Structure formats: structure tokens, C-alpha cells
Image (cartoon, rainbow, N blue to C red; front, side):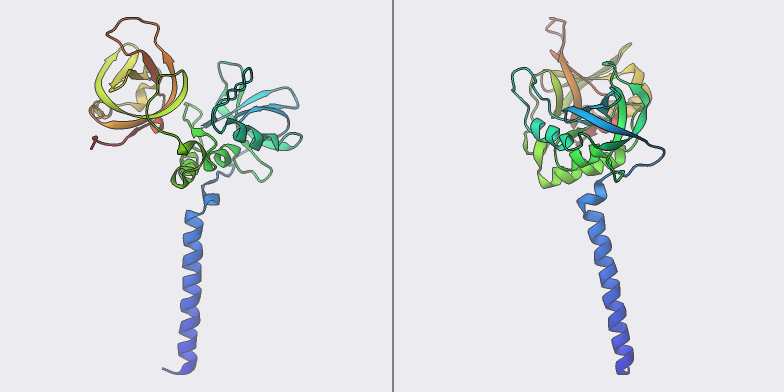
Amino acid sequence: MNVFSQKKRQVVLALFLFVFCATGVAKTSPDNALCHAKGLLERAKVQRVVDGDTLYLSDGKRVRFIGINTPELDHKKGHHEPYAVAATQTLRALVGNYVYLQAGKEPRDHYGRYLFYVFDKDRISLSSQLLSKGLGYRIAIPPNVAYQSCFIQAEQTARKAGLGVWTQSLAWRPHSGFVVSQVVISSITKNRGGWWLATDHDLVIHLPLSSEDYWPAQKVYFLKGHNVEVRGWQHHRKSRSSRYKSWVLSVKHPNDLQDLGMPE
């Protein structure tokens, strides 16, 4: 082999390694987990920020971000949940600036807030940016489940790095509001209200009838005895009967009830 041919092969090999490494970096980069807008958008100016997932537009609309729930601010007593202030401050940088909006299939929530996927000037999802920093939890509420795969990746970025909310315990606690907990399914029943998955704590997971299409019977019964990670809003049950668990957490999409397998 002559010297020219050998040098040519070395150049080709070096170029191949450069491309391979660059591709590898792209796949693992946190920026790769951020969600870019797809489809038509509308432009609006931010007037003020309420908290990490809610803001007001200059036209008076109160907007709730889709796909994320950030820690709660206590506007009355100042007893904020961890990372609530950081999430809020992140959004406050947007005040007076323009964002891009994409309406959900369900346009408003039960509080009357407008439900939007919200993007910055570069058309990058603000929900995914907060998730990738550990400043909120991903949530799936049908029919507004676009960008879920991307939101999952963004959250995993923070989770693997142990950022923000992911420094906290996932042990179940009896309190009202949003939770992410790991529990064991002890028994499963079904009635006119849907599926009821009792756990090894004073908690029952409710899969409502309205979401029945997501939950084939075989898939639900398979969860008995399994450790699961569940997320959503839990509330204290009004019934005082000792036959029932005191706390109820409703799950409307399979992304929010992850099967972790049999306990070790």
C-alpha cells in the first residue's frame, strides 16, 4: 500500500469517527429532549406570570400549560413547595415578550383556564424546558396528549441527573394535591365507576370509566402484586367506612401509571 492510500484511509476513518461521536452526543444531549413545535401556532404577549405553569396574556386570557404540573406556590402564607419559586422565576423572564401557542383538543379546564402548548421565540416547548431542569412533573390528561413522548424524554433528562424535584423521595404521603409515588397494587376491582386499584398504603388508584379504552382488563389485572409508579392529583375520600382506603388518586392515561414489576 502506498503512502497516499494510507493517508487517505486515515482521513476517511477520522471523518467517520467525528460523525459517529457527533451523532452520539446529539442523542444524549439534554437539548435533544426539548420539544419543537409542530403545526400551526399563534403569537401572543405575556402580561404576567402566576406560577410555573400558569400565566396571563396581554389579551387577558389565563393560560395553563399542557403536559406539566409544577410545584405549588402558596400565595397566602408563602409556604411554597420545593422548586415552585424556581419554576415561577423561569417563566417571569417571559413577561413583556412574545410566546407561541398551540391549543389543546380540549381548549379549557374546569377552572376556565385556556389550555395551550406554549413555545418560546425559537418554537421550543416551555413545558419541556421546565421538565428538563427538574422544575415540574410530566402529566397526561386526554385528549391533550400531544408531545408526550418528547415530554417523557425531557423529564428523564432531569431524573437521570437528579435535578430539582427528582431529589425528593417517591414514598407515598397522605396529603391533598399532586403526587408522584411508588406503591404496590394489593387488589383490583371494577364497578360502574371504573377500575379501583387498592395499594399497600391508605390509597386507592382510580381508573375512571371515561378512560376505559386505555385499560384492557388483562392489562389491569396483570398489575396485581406489582410495584407501580403513579402520578396525579389525590384527594381525601368523603366516606368514613373503614372498608375503603382514605385517599383516592385518579389516573386518566397509561403514561401516568408505570409498571415497575414485582417487588424485590
